[in-house]
Length: 321
Image (cartoon, rainbow, N blue to C red; front, top):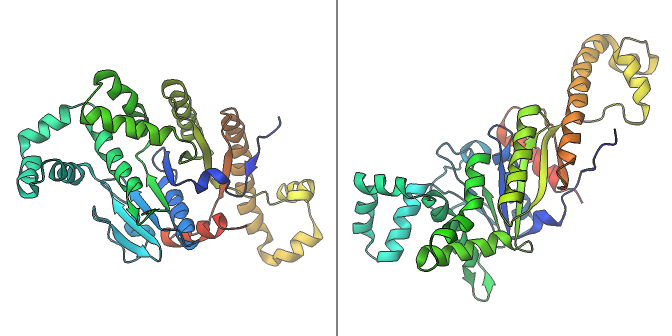
């Protein structure tokens, strides 16, 4: 079986102004989106990283950072926020009605919360409207942000967000919701501005869910995914000497390899044998993802425990020329 191409460098899709990053929970979506944001900031580009979570990961990824709705500077050229629905609704109402105290009281009223919870698509309209606003901000004649990286919700909610503009326009043809939906649709559909990026690991459930998400988005919306980031990809340890390496893993003596590891050779062999088995499993799911006809990009397995250390290593990997 011919394996699909797995890019080791980031392509042009990762340099668009708006990166919409989604994926199944637990695959490293927040990590990858944060790494893309840091990479952008390190290149001197004014960057906003936006989480959408009631349990944000930013505090683990960035030391001394406390996720909140208000924009917070994280490091040079990088700001971050946690885009939660309740404060986003309050902000929207304060702008729309221009009476901040009253509208906050309205938004926190239990009856209002019940009504807004019953309105289909509100949890998509308000956050996407916030992104639309930030993308439209300017500094003089230049955009306020060179890049916005959205750590979007997991696949199911992300699908609902991407389906929202068309669904809203089917229901309403004029007014604020219709206008905002058209503007959001224009952003998501502009492939020179926006990249939809899916993050997955090369395992059965994440690969299946990624394939289903991309298939449904391509079938049910006018938008297209620009890339799939395959996270935690194990290295090809044997490379050009694969047959020699495979033989050594199976217990065949090899003076050169055994001498390198000395007394620890058996322990190292056991560990590398496990890694090689996992790598071969990953190749099967890589073949499945290759059928999606979306470019695949590699994010390597990083043997570190602290999330901040993993982030630093991944940024370095993504920043290679």
